[in-house]
Length: 268
Length: 285
Ligand SMILES: NC(=O)c1ccc[n+]([C@@H]2O[C@H](COP(=O)([O-])OP(=O)(O)OC[C@H]3O[C@@H](n4cnc5c(N)ncnc54)[C@H](O)[C@@H]3O)[C@@H](O)[C@H]2O)c1
Image (cartoon, rainbow over all chains, first blue to last red; front, top):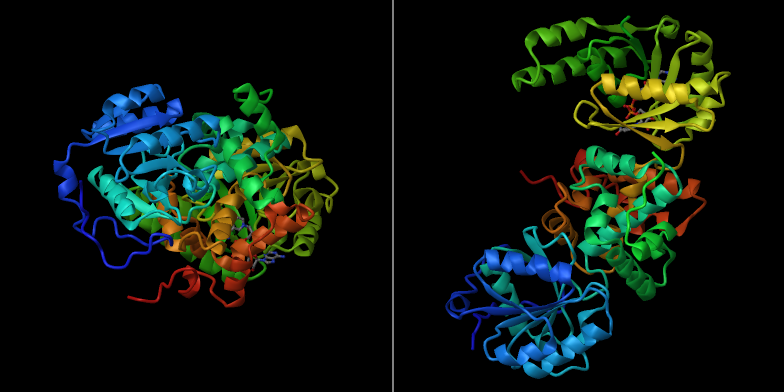
């Protein structure tokens, strides 16, 4: 079992400004042989699996919950990467919490549902922590984490140390739907689709305008396509249900594209 | 035949357009109601071009040639031979309408009249003239010589031919042209609205600090700058007035509701970088 060096008084429940690699947190975890188990959305599992393996960390992509039994003793952390809060995600989290020892952190995508409501009724809710797992973002140098009101400081430190060892910065934010980056990004994509739906400009010109006029890394509509329009809609619907505010209303065109799974293009 | 360009209003944007036009071999007639502004504007262009020479982006000769192409005009009637006139005066509908009425009389009958307005209706400015089909929005971004984009804005009565010519001229100015209808915020200011507004909302919910939001947006999202850094750079006063104008013109569509936090920054006089205090403090050495 790993003991983390405690840093004095970091509140886990509040968003804490962290310096990238200030503390000498880890030395132990490097010696422990990591085995990280991943399950959930195929796209996210792929992105996480590739990035972890690239850093030399052993991963196990769980195809089904039955295969969890074989490796349970060796797993050092688990990622549940289902974006939409659905029945399967519930089953996955339940199975993980039943099978894994209490000190193994369970890091769950908490973009469409808070980590608190995901874990509140499960065994050892203190070992759950939320992550802003969202397609296309894991290639970037920072991950957003959200501890719930139950998350222990030890688990939060442990997970932070795991990302330190991957040379990734972490940001601890409040446990709220959308977290920070997925929330802002989905709102941008939604407005781009409203703009397209209102026939203000062609999808291509909207993307070009945002890249060349505002320095965006991708055009928002193309970015939405990379993320998967259904994923964007899932986040916006969750925001709408949490806030009951008109500003999160999904552009009808975006919802249609999410259902059809295709990129709508105007007559050129 | 070389296209000749007229510019009315030699402030930030007028000077920027004159700069790129002269470098791209257009002759430029630069006019402002204030003669002193024209003089300062040419000085500023001179300074900016020198910097480009120092950075080896243009040659000394390019600069000399370009500067000879800029004619200072103190009489607006001297813009009568221009093929296109760019308007870059202050953002006030009455001033712009009066100006377009006048330009309509003095400009050549085939000339294009292009407004650089960010938030006003191109359609309404065009309606002040007898040839609304020749009026178009050409929305450049500050700093003009660095930002690639121009939004070509089609007013209700702007002709397709005018749209085509405007896009062609933008490209000859070395810009990337996109076409947009005359709706509040056009493309860039509208689509980037949630970039700022959602960040402000998250801050208002105290989900994390503004420094953290900027760090996350840059390092998790891959954006060059964070929303709060950018609001400070643009100026919270400018940024709020754009947001308020879009909100008004959208008949209070809740998606565009401006943020109380930003309003308070403006009320406090915390405009951003330009007065050394905004979301961040720029005072410390
Ligand atoms: N500054 C920006 O970031 C930016 C970006 C895009 C568009 N714009 C738009 O460009 C226009 C100009 O903005 P700016 O920042 O260059 O303003 P500015 O204040 O720097 O310059 C405006 C100039 O217009 C002159 N002027 C005023 N009334 C005039 C008249 N009747 N005839 C001739 N000259 C007159 C003033 O003397 C002043 O020099 C505005 O419509 C603004 O919304 C500005």
